[in-house]
Length: 128
Image (cartoon, rainbow, N blue to C red):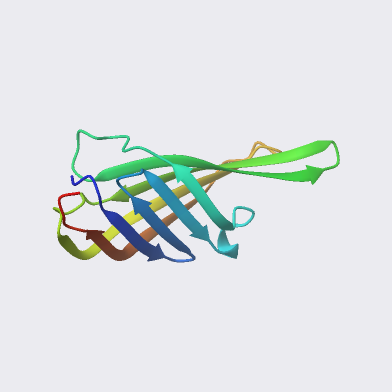
């Protein structure tokens, strides 16, 4: 995998940007993912570096006011991307995102969202 590639992918109700050099993952979620809608920046590393492709994990947190105190909801995010191309290359890319949102207030089973992603990957060339 190259050390400097940028993935820009989108799917149903979301846009994902991932920079391999900084390991910065940005998610833009629409109202479909309430209460986690909005822009989120996650620091993430490839969790399965020994296998082909890139697998990233992270978590989102939402806190709201409740009768007995704050209501905290969390969501675990897993992103699956192809290997980044060699430097000086660009092209199309596809991947997947799985979001498992739990509602800790009621201890219910998580709600899962699985989204196919398509977009571009760019690995600029150069010596520096």
